[in-house]
Image 1 (spheres, one colour):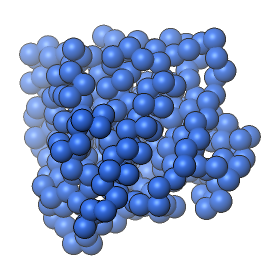
Image 2 (image 1 turned 90 degrees about the vertical axis):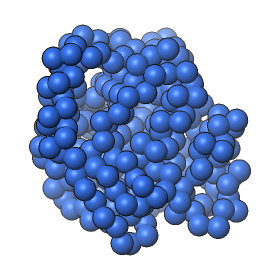
Image 3 (image 1 turned 135 degrees about the vertical axis):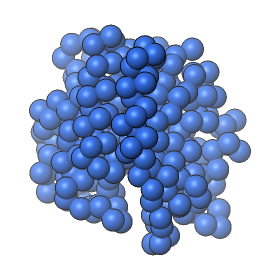
Image 4 (image 1 turned 135 degrees about the horizontal axis):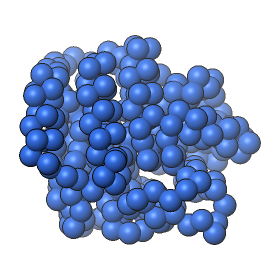
Amino acid sequence: MKQILLINDVVGHSHVGMVAMWPILTYYGHAVYNLPTALVSNNFDYGDYSVMETTAYMRDTLPVWQRLHFAFDAVCTGYMFSDEQARLVADYSRSLAASGTALFVDPVMADSGSLYHGLDAHHIDLMRDMVSVADLTFPNYTEACLLTDTPFRQEGMTWEQAVVLMDKMADLGAKAVVVTSAKVDGQPCVIGRRSSTPIKGIVQDFEEGRYFRLDYDEIPIAFPGTGDIFSSVLIGHLMSGETLKDSTLSAMAVVRRLIDHNRNQDDIRLGIPIEQCLHLL
């Protein structure tokens, strides 16, 4: 059993963010702890929402945890709401990394070619700060483009362009990269780039090539929270000792099963009711 800290927003209505991740990681047998970055009324897709940042709570909590010498095998960061939050979390992550904690960064901010409701270009800089400390980061294609100043193309990329995109993500500081919701040579896929050196807590196959591409058939339903499900399944399998490529395959398979199982849900903005679907993991 691994000790995993989630640093993300808590959404009161909709299965997204930490609400989606916690049950999955617990189901996989890991101990899960949390540091909320904000309390959010509901998924932004509803158009109207309320947000209460928890920056002051984070500012007070992290020094307490350091004095108490709390340790984690992995930290996964998600939605950040301010410069101070990004700086606090980045500094805390660096201090944990010195003792061998694996740092996973999901640069949550955009999809389908544009930023989420309420975000602006400044949020891109916040996420660049987070990616700079990552052992593994897993942006979607839109987020990877924004982070690297790469033009977003609805038609996707060639494989050569995909490699350049992943290399640019690594140039930001991330040791390993997985890009979801990509399209390469017209085929929906997930692409990845392993690190050049070993990373504690992340098994990589150094006998295979540095880059990989995993194709899939797209289900034309856009559930919110599938990125959170993908990242938690990926981390759960990595923390259980599977390789980066195999863990990515497992995460892809789970997301597909969950979307297919819930495709007739009345309101997809609620996200996938993960507690009712744990048997599909």
